[in-house]
Image (tube, rainbow, N blue to C red):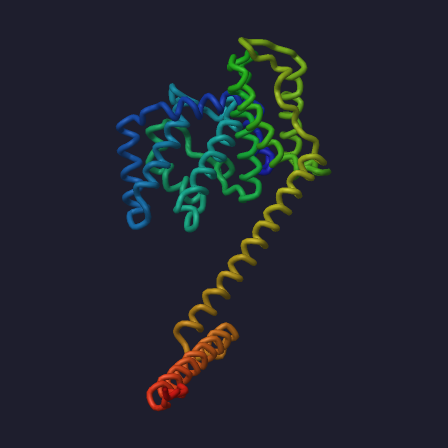
Length: 321
C-alpha cells in the first residue's frame, strides 16, 4: 500500500543526501541527444503556441534528474527508493513549473502526462500510476522548499559523516543561511504537528548534534556554528520586521502624498486661473501692488520736484549798493 499524498511529499527527506547529490549531478549533466529530440517534439506539439522553449528546458532538466538517480535507467517499483525518488521528482517538477510562465495555465500533473508520452520509453520506466506526480499546493510547496534549502546549505558544511568546509568564514556563511531559512520555517510551527513541522524538528536535532560533536577542520570548529533560534525568538523577530516594513510603507505613502499635493499646487499656481486665488499668489500680488504704489509715488514726487525747479523763481534777496 502506497502512503497518501500528504505523507509522500516529505518522504525523500529520509535520504536527503541522495537527492542533493542528484540535483548537483544533474546541473553538470548533458542530456542524451535522443531524449533531447523527444523533448523538442513534446514542446512543439503540446506547447507550440505557449513558450515551447521553456517546456523543452523543463523536459530536459527532468530527464537529467531522473538519469542522475538511475544512470542505468533501471528504475523498478520494487526499488526501496521508488517512492522517495518520485517524491523528489514531484517536488522538483512542482518547483520548476511554479516559477515558470507556464504555471498559470498548466497543472503539474497535466504537464507531466504530456511529457511522459514522449520520454518514458527513452528513460525506460513503466508508466506511472496516478499517485506519483500531483500538484502540491503553494503553501506546502514553500515549506518543502524551505526544508530542501536548509539541507542543501547544511550539507555544504557537513555531509556523509565528515566536514566539507574547512574555512571558518565560509562555514559560518552557510550556517547563517541555515538560520535564516530555519526562521522562515519554525514560525509556522507553534503547536503544529504537521509533516513539515516534524521534518523541521528532525533537521533541528541534526544541526544541534553537529554543534555538540565539536568536530574540527582547518580553522573551523562546529561549536562555532550559529545556534538555531526558538519559535518565540523567531516569531518576535518576524513581527518586528513586519512592523518595520509597515512603518516604512506608511512613511513612504505620506511622503508620496505630500509630494503629490505639492505638484498639484504647483500646476494650479502656474497653469490655471485658480492659481491667482491661492494664498501665495495673493501675497505676491499684494507685494507687487505695494511696489507699484511706491514706484508711482516716487515718480510723482520726482515730477513735482522738477516742476518746482523749472517754474518757481529764485527767492534770493537783492541788495543794492
